[in-house]
Amino acid sequence: MRKSYNDHDVLRYCRNTVLKAMDTVRASMRGSNRLVLKEEVEEYKTEKSSLNPTKGIDALAEDLMVAALEAKLVGRLRVPAVTVFSEELGIRTLPDGASEEDADLVVFIDPIDGTEFIESLQGGWCLMAVYDRRADEVICAVAGDIFLNRLYWASRSGEVEAIDFTTHSWFRLDGSLDPMDRLAGARVNFLTTKVSRFRSIASQKRLLDAIEENDGRVNLSWGSNMIIQVAAGYADAAVEVTKGFATYDLLPGLFIGLQAGLTILDPASGRPLTCKLDVNKLFATYRRDPKNPQRTPFVTASTESLARQIVSLLDL
Image (cartoon, rainbow, N blue to C red):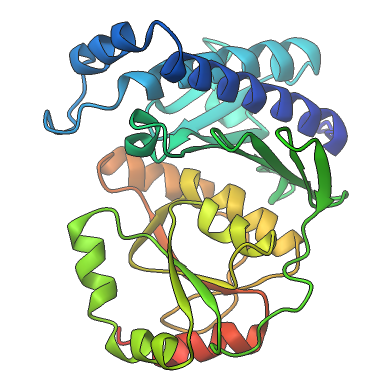
């Protein structure tokens, strides 16, 4: 008989892991060793463009998170095997020598989502979601806003919550107190850091015209952050249609957003997205071409009517 895993125990260790990674990254990029870290970044063996050498800090945070997951989930909770799927590491099963087929839990992590913003102390998130392969569902997800020092989390049986360590405030995530049902005055998140994505969004003339005509605003965002900001009420909608996000980027925000009651749609079909995963297919796609993992585009909003209005204005 397979073991069932307590949501609260798994969530507690995941929160601790993300917090530890956030503290390490924040201290490293603000502290006296920043110049040494920049040298590590530049020397780190990576296929990323030499014009944007920002992977050293990702590797540092990832190593810390993987070690913590092994110590807590395998060591403390006695999970026989845990598979980690990460942007930097790829696919690895813990402890060493364990079989991937025996791993009930798959932990999706992105140690730093938005590394280029970390480099300039402007932002960046630490993301984690735990998927139970046998139950075919997410157990919990945690997302940390590194420099704003906020932590967001959700579990399958608990509340969707957040804490702001700067203001010492705690709150539940349930979208805006007065959710937008139309684009009038709406704040819409887009990812436009790369030129290709900027051009893609700029070509969505009908959507941008509708936002402008209704005195809306465009926010710059990235990764699961895009969805979580909607769940927290900091934005009204989020749109990613250029190429979508890999699962380790998307799943934490997708789960937190759905648990908070957001509408999250496939922009092409208009069908609701879920957190159900074909893990074997995900892994096979990654192993065939690690540079092109399975990606998912989305439109999310605090209300279904706003999400569907945005979908109707897209030119795909």
